[in-house]
Length: 139
Image 1 (cartoon, helix red, strand yellow):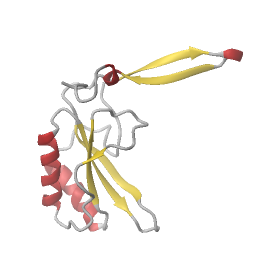
Image 2 (tube, helix red, strand yellow; image 1 turned 180 degrees about the horizontal axis):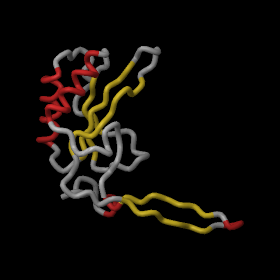
Image 3 (tube, helix red, strand yellow; image 1 turned 90 degrees about the horizontal axis):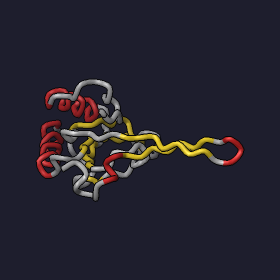
């Protein structure tokens, strides 16, 4: 199952040249970039681990791509995403976010259905990745 999170999640994986073009677009708009990674891509897991600090002073797309590649090398079986922040409105908001790496195998999710009182039905998302211990989910 292909996880669909971020701006370009329904497209084929971006090449490094296409990623560089998106980084250049973000930097031209004054949006600092941040590289993040996780082995739990649950839709409610919005706090991924950061690869270093956000690159507020970075103005070169090649330098940001270098950090992406270093994160990819360190975590080859994790999801890696690039996030660009926009602070024009006096608060930090996400202007652009997309996956730059996926694990070779994405186990996906299942829906757990529970019937409760008064004919109510609750549905929960359970990621198959959580059936394995952290750090070993995609090995």
